[in-house]
Image 1 (cartoon, helix red, strand yellow):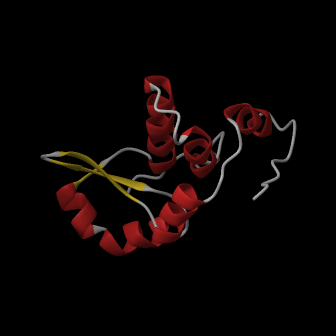
Image 2 (spheres, helix red, strand yellow):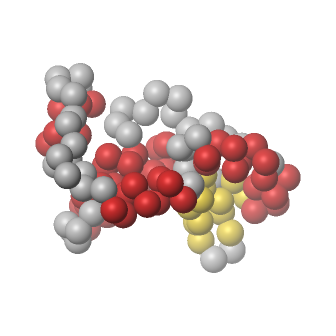
Image 3 (cartoon, one colour):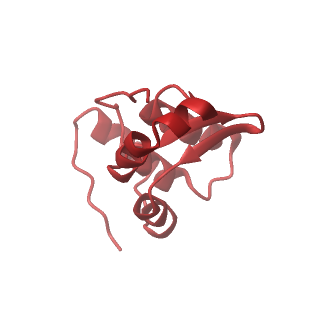
Length: 110
């Protein structure tokens, strides 16, 4: 399995939460970029099958995996991560970017 960026600039889940519901093409591009950056290079389907245990262990630890199939790219994420992204309210993009620069700690208000 290809490793994602070991120290990603921004947590991919924060980016997705902050941009969900915007519906802009720029937002979609930023979400895709964050997930691809965290996942690393896509695995071919045969390679993903061969490394299934390692791939699922990595995914369960919060790092998505990308598998290249004939139909396109498939993203594998843990159920907990999916629920977090869908259900939790995220910070604004500005707050995410500030946190990435180390300027602030993001607080979640529910």
